[in-house]
Image 1 (cartoon, rainbow over the protein chains, first blue to last red):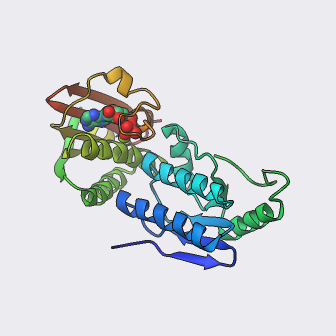
Image 2 (cartoon, rainbow over the protein chains, first blue to last red; image 1 turned 180 degrees about the vertical axis):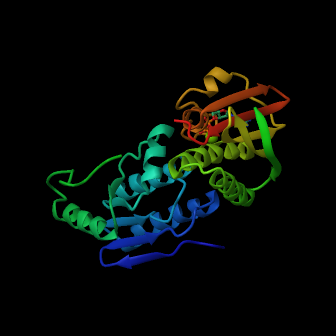
Image 3 (tube, rainbow over the protein chains, first blue to last red; image 1 turned 45 degrees about the vertical axis):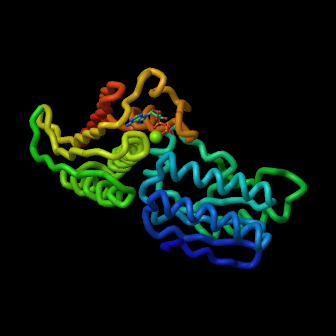
Amino acid sequence: MERIPILKMGPFLLVTIQVDLYDRLALTLENDLINMVSKTEAKGVLIDISAVSIVDSFMGRILGNIASMSKIMDAATVVVGMQPAVAITLVELGLTLSGVHTALDVEQGMELLRTKIGQLDTDEEGLYDSYI
Amino acid sequence: MIVISKEKLTIQKEQDVVLFRNRIKELATKIGMSLVNQTKLITAASELVRNMLRYGGGGITHLEIVSKNSIPGVRLIFVDEGPGIKDITLAMKDGYSTGKSLGLGLPGAKRLVNEFDLKSEPGKGTTVTIIRWKNGL
Ligand SMILES: Nc1ncnc2c1ncn2[C@@H]1O[C@H](COP(=O)(O)OP(=O)(O)O)[C@@H](O)[C@H]1O
Ligand SMILES: [Mg+2]
């Protein structure tokens, strides 16, 4: 079965989505990621969607599910590289990715995750953390 | 309104959706639609085609380039012969879903296009028509 590779980088998991996902593939990714967070006790999940040109309510729900499940396991989720056209479209669609943090690129996403780990017991929100 | 080109694509499984989305992208690019408008159109189409598969048991999509007052646009028609929608007003509400999902597909798709028409008859099926004009806001 086709799947999206998940990379372990220290305390974080990194997923780079290279193609527009069809539903089955997205569901497999959700399952794989949640299993990996649980198995590796990762502290953060970074999902790079810079190559994704369409995020609809199904894909949005998957991102939200990954974030909320990870949160239960004490891991933060950051989605990086969302294309501006996708961000604009999501607003009009009416979708808010609750619990999902966003950053411009992988580097900034890593930075954000590191501050999250650093301040686990203090403030919930980072300085340049943004919700969409 | 003039129909400049038209084609049909049968949607029976998830993999058909990939081809369908790509074809819309080609048509939208052909008429010079901006990237943001293309993204809105394809996202709306993605919602409607999923509904067709999930609730309507698959169906046929019509992809057209149309023109009104010399402004080109892409018209998409989704036709299924599934169970239909009993209460359209309810189905168009944000958050209403009989499938335990987000309930944003129909109302969201409507917001993302310039023209939206939904016709449904219980027991007969559902037809949704959308248009996004090249320069429509
Ligand atoms: N093609 C269709 N055939 C039958 N029922 C449909 C169809 N499309 C939508 N519906 C009904 O309308 C509801 C709302 O659809 P939608 O807004 O896309 O939300 P969701 O797909 O998350 O349920 C669906 O739950 C379903 O009951
Ligand atoms: Mg739907």
